Amino acid sequence: MTDTYSGDIERLPRERIDEMLTNVAKGDEQAFAELYRATSARVFGVIVRMIRDRGEAEDLLQEVFATAWRRADTFDPARGSAMTWLVALGRNRTIDRMRQHREELLGEGDAPDIADEAPTPAAAAESSEERRRLESCLDRLEPQQKSAIREAFFTGATYNELAQRLAVPLGTMKSWIRRSLMQLKTCLEQ
Amino acid sequence: MNTPARDDDDLRCAEYALGVLDAHERAALEADVSRDPALRHTLDDWQRRLAPLADDVRAIAPPPRVWTRIRRDLGFIAPQPKRERWRDSLNVWRWLTIGASVAALVLLGVTFTLLRQAPQTPTTAAVSGEYMVASIARKDGVVHWTATVDVRRARMVVVPASHVTIPANRATELWLIPPNAKPIALGVFPPDRPATMTLPPEIVAQLSAQAVLAVSDEPPGGSPTGAPTGPVLATGQMRST
Image 1 (cartoon, rainbow over the protein chains, first blue to last red):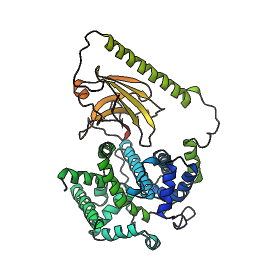
Image 2 (cartoon, chains in turn cyan, yellow):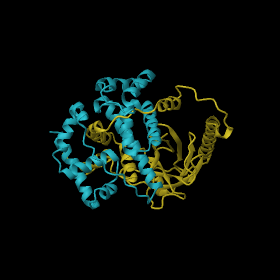
Image 3 (cartoon, each protein chain N blue to C red):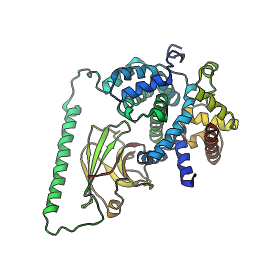
Image 4 (tube, chains in turn red, blue):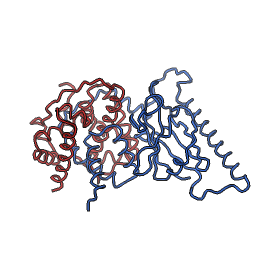
């Protein structure tokens, strides 16, 4: 457990992190260093969870923060938190890299095992209001569909890969995911 | 009022944010988002809805070398001195590139002047701007190539703006993505030196300020399918000069 944060040390209020990224957009190197300290472990955790290879995860984290520096001016706190912005950036870069690999390693099928990602009690206790709302909406889905959504989010798998891993036809997987996404939206907007 | 097209866009954004789309579908949505602020908002909403799931992932402190590399990459600290062969030096490439860009512009200038001087130059009414340009940049904003189109002569010049390296067994292919349309292959080009290509009239007809140029990573010789198969390396919106 030497390389893990318990989470709460670094968990600053949302407004504080938003402010850091807003200052980064003005070229504030100090704010950039603070932002990195406050958020890099969480972004790195998400990347490692998806790509596994630590060296590659480090390259991706470097790319994400270099992009954050250059593109901070596109961050709008009215449209989502800085943490959301960084997590989306990290996930999207990682997914792009995984798709690139897939082209290179065509045919090498080593599907990672499906880990049960149910939140740990500690994580659940400290989770945000938004997280709790999302969880209660996820709980309204069929158990298989909920697990497909979680698997997709945490691993960045394509429809095809999800269908193989969960051993259902591709068409079934697509309709599960699509229906679940629309149900989630409706539930979250209530 | 939700229209079927809007529902479809909403779903594509949801699928993108969740991460289930393949490289081609991701590239198509990214191109659409880059020219449609409303779609950008739809995508932001989906990223926001799903992001709290990331709270469940265990945080892992990255090793300190990553921070050092970020600061070096952004020029906050001087790179470690090491002897470089001149061909490897980015500065040399920059100067060569600037030289090449100037050369390309001079050539365009010559063309332009010749056209202007020619008596009774035939006027093509349909085209508003005579030249269009696009800065083809990576997602992090680093410009990889600049493309200049001489619309009247249907010629395009693509000039590298930074030192671009791709694996030896891969090729870069250029695509034109008109609004709400599939990418049209413009051809494979060398990533590291200026290239010119002649555009067929049906492609010139698709050029507009709403069109996007994209470069994808493809097998040697280009995409075997006629659609991008590899990831998109960089994109740029066309602009009239």
